[in-house]
Length: 126
Image (cartoon, rainbow, N blue to C red; front, side, top):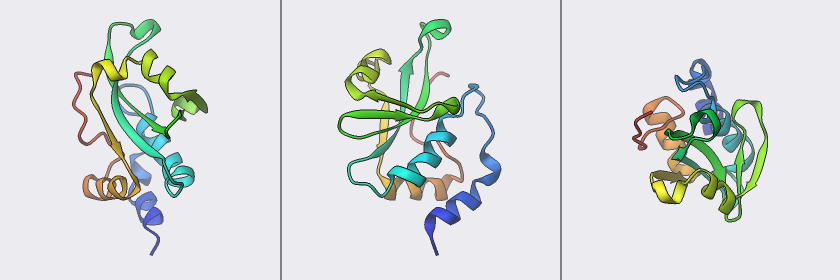
């Protein structure tokens, strides 16, 4: 049986927007499984980022897909490809230093274990 099919069936009811108002864990998780998971060099990341604009001064949990050079973000119905160095700088990701990267095997294991899209290891105030 195809593990991706099992995961999608298990999580069909868990597609609601998270309490933060975003859908990053669901949107990027689905895209990772559908497009990137079987390509070499891609991981999905759950990390704490610094807010911008109205969220300036607040850090919060976020999810994105990355390879060596770029970040791919499909949250809130967007399709962004941003150079990784720029994305990390804007979100102060290296400075905050609170993120977890998952390859396909670990990502699938966590989805089946926790029966949600995450975050699982990430602890943030918001």
